[in-house]
Amino acid sequence: MASSTAFPGTVSADSINDVSGSVWPESAKRNAAGALEIDGVDVRDAVTEFASPLFVLSETEVRSRAARYRAAYTSAGAHTVYYAAKAFLSVAVARWVTEEGLGIDVASGGELAIAMRAGVPGDRLLMHGNNKSVQEIDMAINFGVGRIVIDSFEEIARIAESAARHNVVQKVLVRATVGVEAHTHEFIATAHEDQKFGLSASAGTVDEAVRRISKLPSLTLVGLHSHIGSQIFDAAGFEVAARRIVSLAQRIYDEQGIEIEEINLGGGMGIAYIEGDDPLDVDAMAAEIGEIVAKECAEAGIPLPALAFEPGRGIVGPAGITLYEVGTVKRVELDHDQIRTYVSVDGGMSDNIRTALYGAEYTVTLASRLSFAEPVLSRVVGKHCESGDIVVRDCWLPGDVTAGDLLAVAATGAYCRSMASNYNQLPKPAVASTRDGALATVLRRETIADLLALDPYAEERG
Image (spheres, one colour):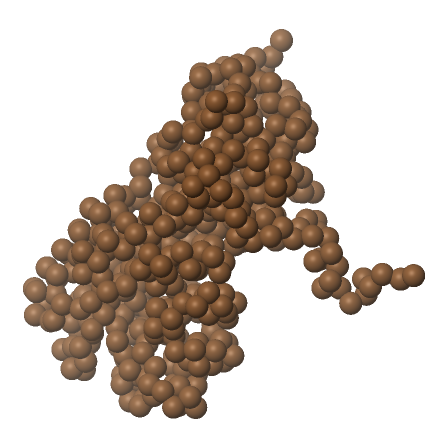
């Protein structure tokens, strides 16, 4: 008979029930019935109320992480820490992070509209984007967005014209690519030269952008922006980027007499998705970057600018999990007398595209009960008509996982619901929040009626 436990890296039956590691929300634990709890909420109750699949987001943890990032980077000289709207945004989340003292960086008119509806003050917002439309620029300027990040020469003219029409002087930063490719996936590294974002620091295009901005009365340059990537564990990239952006600020000051008042060093700090991931310590990293910038500015003989940061997924990512219901279990014989168990769930690449897109790795556990059955090599897959529809590529699950069980996938608060689609016409899952033992709706579940409402030919006929 083929064996299911001969692969390296096997785990014990006890260990696969553990939810105390760094990949899970801090409040995660098993209750007396063996089910997973978040903030005192039994995940079985959450699925009963909201159905499955379901994103569960700990409000408690989002707030505590936001407060920690704000405190750490404020101590390092930052005037603003910006929450990344693209990671996940809703009116509730926008209010949580604003109440904890953060700004928000938005990258589209839709994200801006949600921040506006949440009552976020305009001066707490920063607008990104490599191809902002005239409508989006008008919307941002009309609302009083504090800073717009210029990403091209065309945007200089567009933003200047819009600001003039609105009779305001718009604060802008220039996004500089500084030739740093962080240790991250190719698709999410954003500061090397061969990519769509920003203007080259080495080729002099940033300098030219500064010259053009300085001649336009409706714009005022407040600083430079650099972002080296996402899901970064190695501090070396931040150190190099900080030195290069300070050197660029010195060059602009020496050659044009323009003082750079602010440097936004982006962020992209990584989080733990699987045991063994070792994210950078927030407090230590903030202090180190602050010291580097201060040292470089002193040596360059230029005034120390204010700093700003965009931590990215670090605030919301670890605070979220996804719950799925198991539908079918299939055991497939592999080479060398091995067996892989395919566990099919009721979601998939429509609610988490990252595994298919980036080869992302995740941690999964049986969430509705304890099991001490022998662990088997498993692959958690979705219900879509794609062979690449994989949620967790390689994992160990109890050998008695069966239809009706609930699985929980950790660290899905960022870039899962926000990147969700309606592939195969699946409605998008709900997002529920937890706090002090209570559940609340963040986003309701989409319905088939929602999908049909977009189709003018779908009107019911008598």
